[in-house]
Length: 189
Image 1: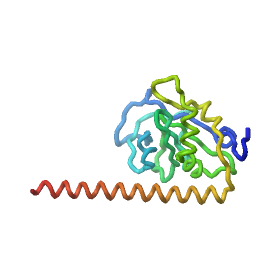
Image 2: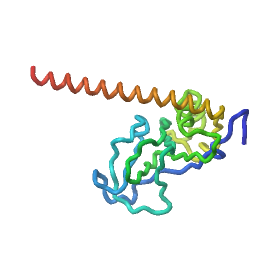
Image 3: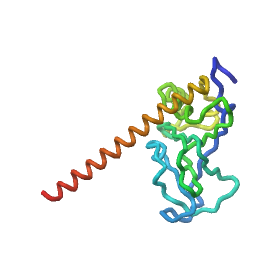
Image 4: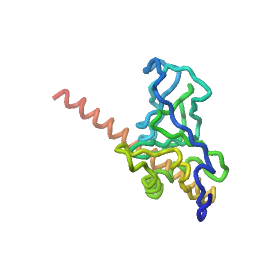
């Protein structure tokens, strides 16, 4: 369905659920699969991920570059999968995996829009209001109307957003390093 240059997400992308930890034999640093959790989406950082030992099956969705991950409980934050580790990665069940299938939509633009105030309002309107744990159902996400400006404009906005996120992450790392330095200096007092 279209709404004034907006199209339902289900027409533009496939939506998959993340993986539940029911069948995990071990979580640690030596497993065969990398595990993406909501905090990785919140920080938009996929560089340090725990690992799981599990058997893969056809029903498990392995993450791909340019997949959009959207946390589906309480706070809805999106991130585009980029620079994933070499081994296969799975997302937690607290994450929706959105895989763009339309050439009309640039995946990083969708991440930008979902995190924008307009996208957040649209997501909040669809959350499950009958539960104490505010969540987003797949059916509600599928009917989210996504704006589709020209693809060139989508790329410009997404690139600006990516630069802002990169700058924020670098500033956060710098701040944390400065705190560690101060902490180290305080031990010598």
